[in-house]
Amino acid sequence: MGGEDRPDVLNHMEIEAYVVALEKSKTMELGSISWLEKHERVKQLTVQSVIQALSNREETVKEALITHEKLKLLVHDLILIELWREEVLPELAKHALTQGFSIYPILYHESTCINLLETVLYHPESAETLGDGIVDLTDYCLRLMNQFITFGNDDDEENDEGHQNGSGDRQRQAKEASEKDVDIIKISRGVLFGNCFKGLSTLRYIIENIDSLGSSLVSRLTVSSDAPMLLTELILQKPWRRENWQSGKISEYDPTTATWKTIDSSDHFILNRNEVQAWLGLYLLLKNNQVLGNYELYDGRKNQLLKLRAFLNDLSLDQLPILGELQLFLNQIAIQSGPFAPSKSPLLLEMIAPIRDALETEFKEKRKKLIKVYTSELVEASRESLLEKAIKLAASYDIANFEPTLPVKGVCSKCGKEAEKRCSKCKREWYCSRECQVEHWKLHKVTCGNET
Figure: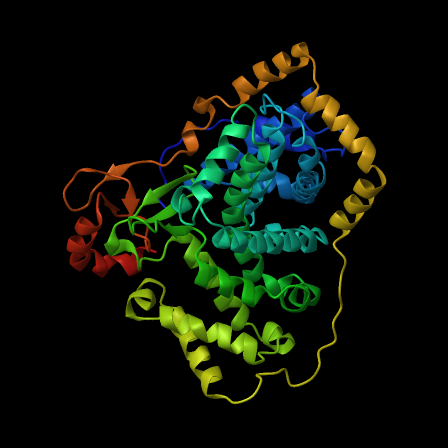
């Protein structure tokens, strides 16, 4: 990744002060004026950490989070808002919401936390300092992957309008009935969809460091949750891609801009970043001796894995050469009769997820009070309170605060025009179109492998 010059949003002293001041969010305070201060600190640290990562500079945000042992706090907030989204938000959605801006920061705090964790967990030492919090984070990512798959199974409203008799009329009636109110559940699902991409990358980083994180995590990935099958299903479903049944055009989701973009037919077989993460995660699991020692490849699992052979061709192997090893593994299990089982039944040490377990208990005990408090704070708030929050959020979410993290444009290596795409391997050469990239490949392939 190139070391573009990006301005800081926090200096070294501010980073230190913000990290030291980080506190766990309490179950009753989400969305309040005092909590918005906590959210703002996490948001600013996230922006700064992304700037440092993109610029190949010393990652002082990561170092401060590790030094002051704050990473587990971010996992706590992730789980807290996940439970809030599941237990409280549906109750709030029963009310007629004429505004939703006081709820948005709560939803986006979950995105901010997983974004920051994804950035810092690129470094192995970050995962190792999470302690038992790594179990909660792993479980959270696995739940996101299950959700990711359901997004792939969902029909898209725009694509499916009129697909079945009467469905278009029903959709229009539902839209007319709700257009006066804020559809906070729909907004929540949109935010959650974006979180899935961050969760996929984070899960891959965890899998990459599985040997140093304890055998209980292996059990988590293979017994409690079937991570190999989850990743296999993701590759088969490709929830980041959709096809319009009327036009036949294919679109891919860009998490950076939160938009769907139509791709050229020549790009249909290009592995995007999300697909690469899923392939790498699966490859790392199936080459790990601890995993294979705990994972029985019975016929159902074998058959599902063998579906992936259709995607392993010269083009995909050229983009991600390590898939050649996965192809050999799949060929081996294809010719072996019977289940591919561990040599002996493994001793399973199952750890509870301490953060989720404690928060679930608290939510269960305080459910009625939580709904009452948040209805008062977020639905029935006074005009003065809403105005105070609006002023604070307007400054917090000023686009100027995010400009340093937005994608940088380059110059096409072939024709010299402004370019937005880069070589997927080395990330150094820019291209304005697929055609320019193909034409320039004869020259670029000589140095591409040496620049990664």
